[in-house]
Amino acid sequence: MTRLEKFTETLEMLHRETPRQLEAFYSLMKATKSGSFLETKHKALTLLALGVSQQCDSCIAVYVKQALEAGAGREEILEAAWLAVLMGGGPKLTYMEKVLEELELNGAVSE
Image 1 (cartoon, rainbow, N blue to C red):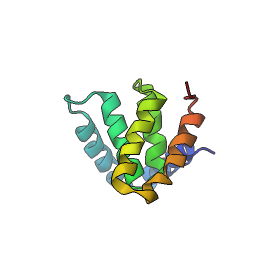
Image 2 (spheres, one colour):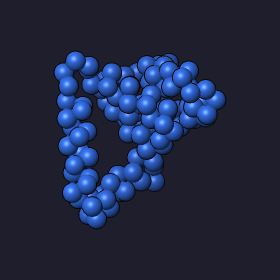
Image 3 (tube, helix red, strand yellow):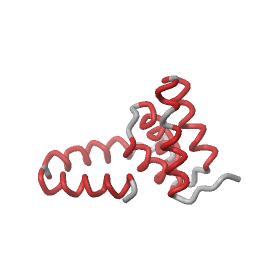
Image 4 (cartoon, rainbow, N blue to C red):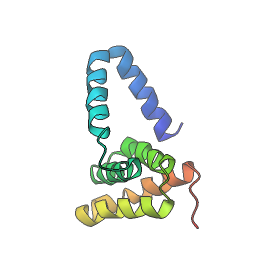
């Protein structure tokens, strides 16, 4: 089971057990992501960098996939992830492994 599948399973369980809280979070997420100044691709890349910064495996899985779907290339995704490493140092560097893994799982090959 991929990280993304496991996270989806967790969200489904939370929706069954705590629907009010999850729906409130989804409302916040929708309101935050619906702004019109940044393109979808740039939002996904920013959220990916934040996911690396926060050492969130599921965030990395979600936002690598969303960035790819929004038209980001492998190089753009890696550059965004490196920004988190720049600000966070060695501990964040270890999460580059997760970014590379998600790129491979999503079929984004090196050029």
